[in-house]
Amino acid sequence: MQLEVLRMYKQCLRAAEKKPGFRDNVKNEFRKNASIPKTEVLRLEHLMRQGWRKLQMMQDPFVDGMGRFQK
Image (cartoon, rainbow, N blue to C red; front, side):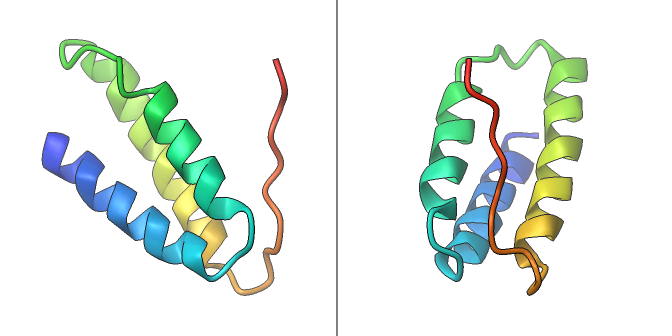
């Protein structure tokens, strides 16, 4: 699981290089979730599925912005 997360992180950073403002968003999301224990497998799998969907969105050439909710 850990290697899969790192692979996704690298792919997200590569996809974010082509779009302004995405790189900071990617880093913030991964840092925010870095403290999740490895034992919470269901939560990690859910976040991985969400991450793959966001990666596909970033790789779409027609997407030029990423929405984000503020707390």
